Amino acid sequence: MLGQMQDRPLLISSLIDFAERFHGDGEIVSRRVEGDIHRYTYADAAVRSRQVANALDHLRIAHGSRIGTLAWNGYRHFELYYGVSGSGRILHTINPRLHPEQVAWIINHAEDEVLCFDLTFLPILKAIHAHCPHVRQWVALCDADSLPGDTGMPGLIAYEQWIAGQGTDYEWPMLDENTAACLCYTSGTTGNPKGVLYSHRSSVLHAYAAAMPDVMCLSARDSVLPVVPMFHVNAWGIPYTGAATGCKLVFPGPALDGKSVYELMEAEQVTFAAGVPTVWQMLLGHMQQNGLRFRTLQRTVIGGSACPPAMISAFKEQYGVTVLHAWGMTEMSPLGTLCTLKNKHLKLSAEEQLKILCTQGRPVFGVDMKIVDDAGHELPHDGVAQGELLVKGPWIIRAYFKGEGGDPLIDGWFPTGDVATINAEGYLHITDRSKDVIKSGGEWISSIDVENIAMAHPAVAMAACLGMRHPKWDERPVVVVVKKPDTEVTREELLAFYQGKLSKWQIPDDVIFVAAIPLGATGKMQKIKLREQLADYVLPGL
Ligand code: AMP
Image (cartoon, rainbow, N blue to C red; front, side, top):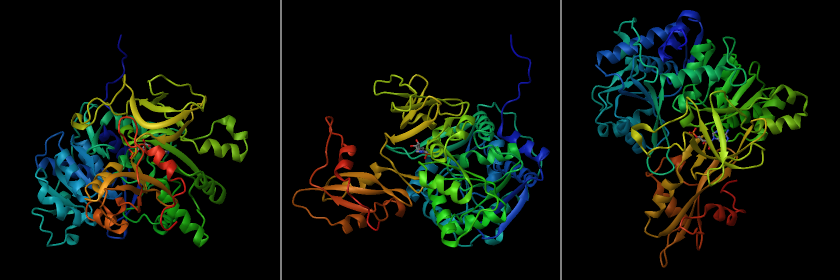
């Protein structure tokens, strides 16, 4: 017997409709690329989202077509989130920090038909637009007066001009809730980046889950600052949860330095913020140097890489702010776990509480997880046994876009590539990554890319790239090199060799020459052993 409840699909358009009808006066504040502060409401955003949908219809963009964005966190990007997905197209957010060649590769792989970008990224698009044959319309996220005249990009239009003449009514299509809504590429550890295709259903379920009390606990009384970019797993879903809850949204635009973030937090009475540890390091540094305090900030979710315990205690002890340590990944939309205390932990000492708060926390309802040994056998949740972490749930990937990489699942579970323990109370502790990518300032650097370039140098026999701990950037890459016999190359020459092949921040900080790199039985480099050999190594400048 079937239940007798209404069969309403879970759609992204219903989030903005709800926001308009029931908290239409909720504020959305953005620091713009132009430098000023822009303010409007959810109701205003809803109207302009419908104009975006009409502009896409006008271009005869088919349902399921991809619309790319290279943009900071701001109100126009927010409108694209709803106008694009709501009307049945797929929002494809691109990380502008990638090398322009990688950006072009991703645009072409996704077959983006419209590309919307902040003027900050005009130089990237000027360089690559001629190599992106699928793009029919380039849209600069600005008004007509701000659009430079001599871009050399045929048909480039200002966003404000693009939507200005469009109607403000639009009937959102009643899509199947499993229809694709957004696309986000991960930097693959091997080969090219792979696309993760979220559905309307997965995005709406994630929006509900993120708002729960032991998750982000967002409400209409919060003022929320997502510093995490809208191109990094949809700013961890905050643009959707915001519309569902009616919280005030505060978008920081391109100004992510400590001073700008602090001033925006204070001016907009931010109660809740979200970002990677590097951003908060800059914020805390600015506050400590200038003896500043928060007036309103209560909680901040920190994830993307392990949050140092010193940061968690600095927030708590010096500023009275609770850190919610979160773990997730692009393939998980991204929420997997988030750390909050249980009632029984409240009587523990501050030191014991801190130990718990430094873990990655408990799974969000909807996410199931287990750890397994090398043979795939499940390991106990005893806080000691370490194994590869596998996950499943309705907002976790089933397959990559266009089937890249084959079937990623093992008996229905997605292997995360992270190594972890889980304790009897369900708290997850990530101990390591089985992949070798390096995370710098919240962004991946592929060790294989770094190695491949070194290997292209005529004097290099073997190269291994390692992430070395860095107090500001979490990790920085160094490349360990074995020279070919009877050849010469200096550290400076090799570093110069990287120029133009990788983005500046992806280039290694140092070159270490060694006589040999340890190899395993199958001829693979043994980076763990190599690390042990370099235990005393210190990055230049530290
Ligand atoms: P991404 O898909 O770029 O968001 O990266 C996901 C990966 O970042 C995870 O598989 C982890 O290796 C790492 N990660 C994310 N959050 C944390 C965390 N809180 N602690 C440790 N590693 C993390």
